[in-house]
Image (cartoon, rainbow, N blue to C red):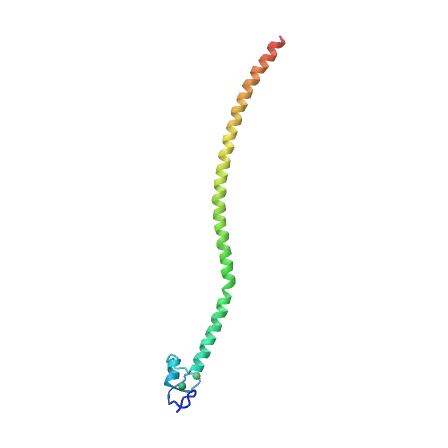
Length: 123
Ligand SMILES: [Zn+2]
Ligand SMILES: [Zn+2]
């Protein structure tokens, strides 16, 4: 029996799939898989097409999860920044409220002095 590709070569094996005879070099080209180079190539091409389809299907999940990750990071950053600013603002607010209280007390004191002057001068 001769190889179906190399007509001058003696066949050493038969393809598991198509049943064609192949020589030693064909068998080694196919990685001694038991398949002829034609069937082996078909198998690889099918596998490649399937993988490409699978790779394509990762596109939207990758974009979606990346967006989710970025959003989550910003939420944390926003939370930390917001919390810090909130604390800072409330500190400033109470400091200013204290100042207002002091000023009110000073103004009341001065009002008392001024009212004394006006009443004493009128007498
Ligand atoms: Zn074959
Ligand atoms: Zn051959």
